[in-house]
Image (tube, rainbow, N blue to C red; front, side):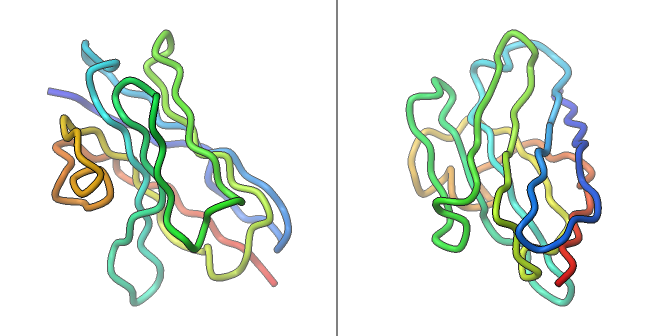
Amino acid sequence: QVQLVESGGGLVQAGGSLRLSCTTSGRAFSSYAMGWFRQGPGKEREFVAAESWSGGSTYYADSVKGRFTISRDNAKNTVYLQMNSLKPEDTAVYYCAAGLGRSIVRLTTSSGYNYWGQGTQVTVSS
């Protein structure tokens, strides 16, 4: 069993930055691909970013490419999401997820993940 706890959300003005963290419990963190998803008000959960288990590959939604960066620290069992140039449309609850998927399809869809955090709210004011 893997437990994930997100932190770092909050209220920020448009153009600002936030860094989300997701710390996992349990062993074998380095075996898991890690992903970030978000769900805005009245919207379905959508893919944001993912990093392969090895850290060698990263994937981003077009809407965040060039602004967000996913990274992981296996020594700390933590994955990060650095969010820059935030926009009001980035307002959402952000979830991290861990999974054993290896393909880009599985890494960019919620069904490819086995474990989820409880979410952290990010609000971007205009």
